[in-house]
Length: 86
View (cartoon, rainbow, N blue to C red):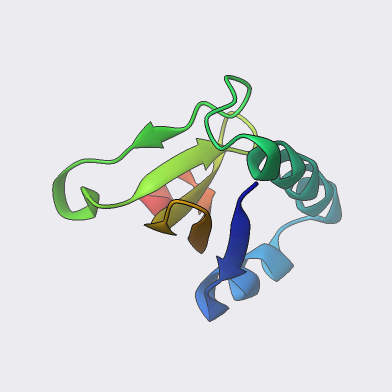
């Protein structure tokens, strides 16, 4: 089981999204809590300047960028479209 923390930027960006996407984000987070590498999430490591970060899909265009703090703690950094998050 994974424990999730949120950056203030993540929370601010999440509030700006439509309520339907906020609800979908919560559903995806429940999957993430059980298994961060569940195939439905498309979890992947980022490259370049973000090479220490990871991301997963909320939906095709919306991604959550996060950082593993340790084996069971994650910090969600940003949420948004691929172009805005990466």
